[in-house]
Image (tube, rainbow, N blue to C red; front, top):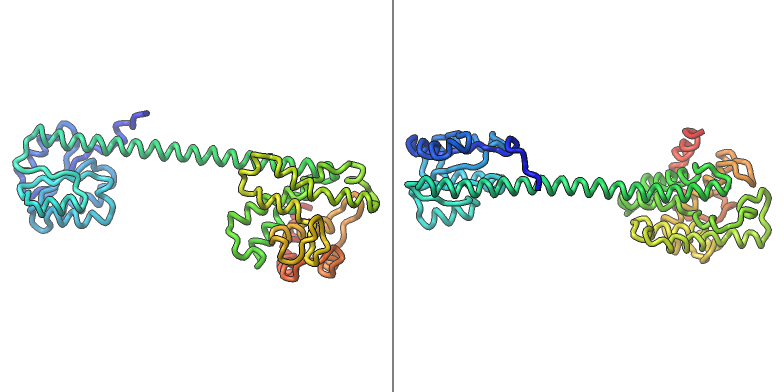
Length: 360
């Protein structure tokens, strides 16, 4: 294990005793090992401890002192957590059982009786100081390792997201799109869930995962022949039935990727890929789900997909103007939507429109 640089470890010892001779004896014992600070009563010692921060490595504390005794100092320190970070030794001739019991209960590290034996007190104090130093170094090492693990986990998450985005964008290229479609679907989904009642009960993290999952809604189109996918005119009934299978193929594709199943977005992605063409009145596909049988996230992505398709030029049509887009959605020309979802959509549609104006 890498050693902590010596100058980063606090090396000051505080001696709190009202007897100047006792302070001198203890100072002499430890003078070669630590910088020494002294306090002649408990109140002064407490102030030094509170102001010294991490510079102290240990405190030698007398019990019987004027103004504030040693036990009172311990009582003041105990609720602050200082006694977990700083070893305090009671150096006292007042070694009655009740005194020692309370001292240990409050968190004192050791009780050393007066008169002190130099080599004994030196060794006991030094051993504990070294233990605390080692614990601090270990704590710093653990923190560094945790930070590194978090950083690497973030890299893995970013890599996974990048792969998901790349797959979704590649499919958009097959569909004659530039990849902007999936980014808009992501943004529309996030906005509808975070700024309207449709996202009620969902956490910020859940909304983020749903928005990520939304970009995979059309991954099943990878299984659709180019002749159908990019046909400029109306599809025949047979071709339309083949096109509809992209929902099932998408769910199957997502389920076949083991690494994706460990991703938090997987359950949302699977549901959205399969059900983003279901409709509120049960006339959608592939499962004919109706009303509340359709998840909120599948409903939101469904509307986002329709809104974007109507607002943009496609191989088979020109873009519609804003008023036409809103009218077609609200009058059911593109299938029935949850009335609550339509209300939420109309409330934020001006903000959705900005997504297109910003990107030209």
